[in-house]
Length: 125
Length: 240
Image (cartoon, rainbow over all chains, first blue to last red; front, side, top):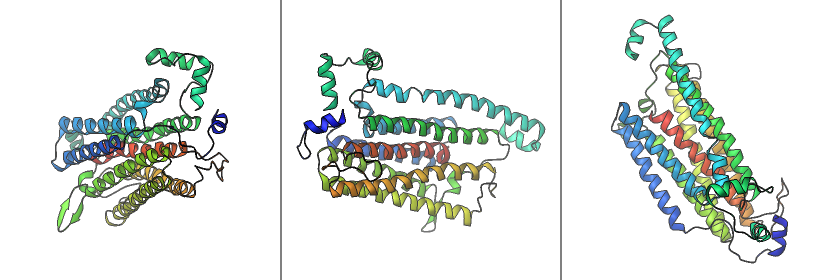
């Protein structure tokens, strides 16, 4: 396919090809990523704690990742057959994270019961 | 273009949405229409790399959840004293901005590449490589500070849980390795663009593939992925 293509269009001939989007799209995303990164840095700077901290960290992380994949990596403009083939398998990772967090809790409780000094266990409860 | 010939042969415009997915995958031809094979392969490589990094981050989560010793506070460990004031995580924040900027210049390089603007593409790729190299430099500084001044080792550290060192060196080390490899490939790509190898479709020295501006986009996918992984490392390791 690629070779047939090359024969039809000799080198040097200008033609519309590949992913071409206005430069402003990239500058906008660049700016948004800067703003979001600043926000996630401020989460630490202002010492947000507990569920608010975790929620904000995850929110900014997901937004940044989404912008990079959708615009910089052009996923927004790809056919769904490719998008799903790449993005759906990563869902399996959520299962892994879920299972390992169960495992982590269990190991912590076991260690608390058998190994840890009692004051450390109290601190984590 | 290649996909034009294919759609003309089929006489019908490719279906969109869920029907499009079924049609593409059941077409008895290549499943990824309108996607050069090099790009599809890069995406599949990146998917497998995603699983590698996800395994690292998940094991980090598991050891951090299960340790009975307090985890060192990253906000304090990675603080820098600038002008007599201790600023938390400042080096990591700068590294984040540098990597995002490198992604921005890379995205623009891809765009100018498809416009066959040789000079702009090469210069933007070189700027991207320079950002990447400065990122690796800062990481080397960070590692040195952690090892020499803070006494962090893969098997222990004075601040708390021993697993802090092992997961830190493993995760950031693997990421830094990806950045370093990326910088090398960016420099090679910049040279190829500058010499006009992609315009003249000269075969590459390693694979013999004919030069093509799709290569810049494929290189870009890898580079954005490195930035993407850093987003997750920044959130889970440094901020959590």
